[in-house]
Structure formats: structure tokens, C-alpha cells
Length: 215
Image (cartoon, rainbow, N blue to C red; front, side, top):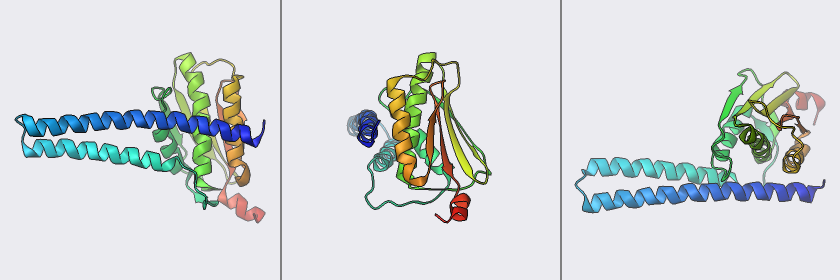
């Protein structure tokens, strides 16, 4: 595979996420329209109407934050990053995937895990791609996904796996997902390794290891 293949796969995933977020935006706008109708024509108090509108505005704002996570940033650089923060963003964003949003994800993050040295959007992309592979396998098996973050002084590992019995992970699309994730992490000396269960493991050096190596 090549870098253009990895880029093309990410653009496919980005489109799938955009379609899901667009659907969610449509639902929110429909609810706002219904709230406006109730305020104009039905017997509701101002407080009830205001509460409903505030709730929908908060939901719209959450969707806006999801949209802001998707575009790449030309001025991005490697920086120290707490792994759990990006994991939380990735899981929330992938929850809007047009085909895989109903596959549940269970997250476990070791509280002692060290910061990594990576470009934030690159790690987000890699996690989203990994979630695609694992969620497809989990969907086929009728199970969910477990995303675990653990590590030591040198490496932080992100395990993204279906939590039930899944078919062999030799699907062509899954292979592209893992390869694209690998490309995302290349500049940060990270790796992405496919597993037979359809999931994969991402690995990144810790900030401590990078400093020791003088990178």
C-alpha cells in the first residue's frame, strides 16, 4: 500500500462521519422547529420553552465541536498529549459514524499512563480508523468494542478490539484502516498492528522516551 491509499481511506472515513453528523444536525433542527412551534401555538410556559431551547442549543454546540475536530490543520506540530483526552474525543466523534454508531465502546484508561509526543489530529485520525476496523468486526459478531490505554515508561499502547468472538481480521477494508492509521502515526515514530480478531493496537513512544532519545 502507499500514502495515497492511506489518504483515500481517511477521506472515506471522514465522509462517513460527516454523513452521520449531518443526520444528527437534521434531528436537532427538527426538534428546535418543534420547540418554536410549541412556543408560538401551544400552551407552554416561557420557562419550559426556554429550557427546551437551551437543551437543543447545547446539543448543537456539541455537534459543532465534533465538526471542528475533523479537518486537518496545516500548522499542527508534535506536542505532549494526555492519551485519554484524545480517546474521549475519538469515541464521541465515532459515535456519529453513519453505519457503525450503534456499536458500543467500552473505554479503560490506565490512570498512570504517561503523556505521548504526537500531533493531536494524527492520533485522533488513527483512533478513528482503528475504531472503524474493530467496530466492523464487532458488528459482524454482534458484540461491542473495548478500547484500552496502557503503557510503561517507554510506550503507550491503544488496544482497539471487539469484545466478543469475531472473524479473522483479513478484511481488505480493515487492512486499509490499519495501514492508514500507521501512516498517521509515522512522523511520531508510532505503529499500528492488525490483530486476528479484526481489531488492532496502536503504539506511541512516551514523552519521556522521546526526550531520552533526543528526538
